[in-house]
Length: 208
Image (cartoon, rainbow, N blue to C red; front, side, top):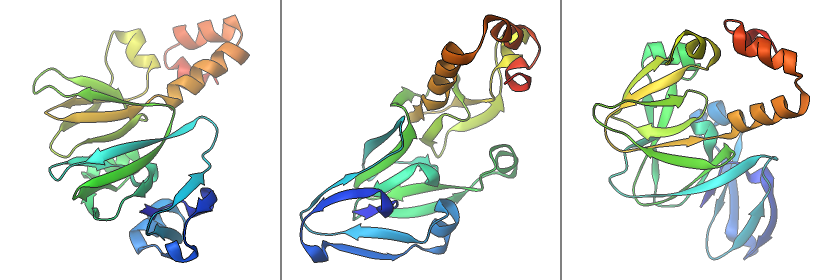
């Protein structure tokens, strides 16, 4: 197993030579903003710490998996899996401030580090699924994506950009940003501020 955040390991049970740290490749250094990854071999157990509100989701990969992942969400992947780079379209790069996605080949397990729980939704060839752009974790390589908003004028003005997605396969998304936003509003915001955020065009962006 390859751990991309080895500094988060709190406890380890296994042979002392079962862990071997090494330099990441260049794309890993760029995406993770770190230099070292840990490779675990042989039977062992370990405990890793994650930030409050985050969770690790284990995804079982099959040989035919075509999901594209954000490298920032990757916490570990098992041996026998190979990582491949996919370059995004220029328009998507400018909007998401992201240039590449990662695709895996082979069978094994990928561990995703996300804010909150991870959910799955099936795509349809013609009926679009709208997914909050900041919540998308993984999607099929051949899915058709269009960045947009939906609903009436008030709805479209106060929401984040969404990916309008059609195709086949499964989409993974997490709920952390929306959950933390709701919690903050419930604990801190007064009634007047919430009303102004709802009523004023783009109030959710202007009023913090």
